[in-house]
Image 1 (tube, one colour):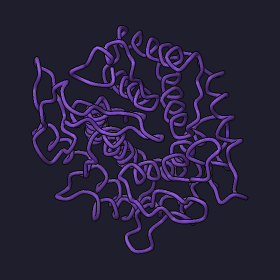
Image 2 (cartoon, rainbow, N blue to C red; image 1 turned 90 degrees about the horizontal axis):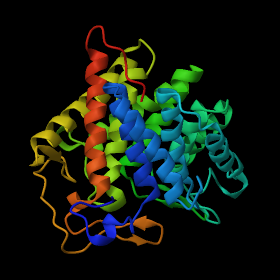
Image 3 (cartoon, rainbow, N blue to C red; image 1 turned 90 degrees about the vertical axis):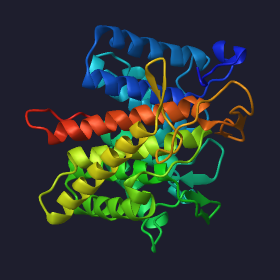
Amino acid sequence: MVAWPPTRRDRWFGGWHYWWQAHLLDCLIDAELRDPQPERRKKIRRQIRSHRLRNNGSWVNNYYDDMAWLALALERACRVTGIDRHRALDKLMDQFVKAWVPEDGGGIPWRKQDQFFNAPANGPAGIFLARYGDRLERAQKMADWIDATLIDPETHLVFDGIKAGSLVRAQYTYCQGVVLGLETELAVRTGAERHAQRVHRLVAAVAEHMAPSGVLRGAGGGDGGLFAGITARYLALVATTLPGDSPEDAAARETAGDLVLSSAQSAWDNRQTVKGLPLFGAFWDRPAQLPTALGKQAEFVDGAVSGSEVAERDLSVQLSGWMLMEAAYAVSAAEAPDQERTNL
């Protein structure tokens, strides 16, 4: 369900958000990597099957960023559990490959029949293409397009996107996260120096501009509830997999890991506890609020989901906290002796 406490509509799955559910699948995979359980593998299979059923029997929708998140989660599920969803992955890959339109200023667009080319679509789609289907060259072109088009020359943060030739200058945490993930993936797989250098620059920018007191900045509920968790996931990827022995490589890994661990400690310290289980805050640097089913509820408006009156009610916020805790485990496990690194 997309909200807790749920209304009757929530209990009947009247509200359902494709990309939130993709991150739920990703979190289940994180948990399976940390603590393999037969029952959890059943949940992963059920989540995959239910996603397609609830999406009208289809893997695709009109939003390329949504499909990229599902593609990433599905690809990991196949590697971790052995489940075969290659036809779904091939279909999703085809969506991204055919959406590439440099002649229109992209990049791939945010959604079909749109001229908004943004980091939240190109970042995760690029990570997926780097991992699946031997599409490294296209993934590199996507990373190079982001670097040439969307980097703020002053802060070195990633702008949101470009629409009809005009720069959309908003700077969201998850834009930084997906670009860190893409550039780290390419640094690992290609060895090209430019990718590691971009990671060094962006990790430093996130630490300076998006993590007051070392804690990643929150973005409320709705879709924004997922932003910091996504950033934590890919900071953990930097901390555990960025190659290289230079002082800059080591500094980027250390800073990324520190941001994850300090954010996780703060989020844990500020959690509420409900029936022995954690309820995370939308802002990890302040106490979480206990939600109710009353007041304004999250709703889908013009391609995005707004937040509930109490953001902690939204599934997105709780997934983000879960994602952060799994990221912190991955960083801690990589630092501990005799521990295998978790594949994020």
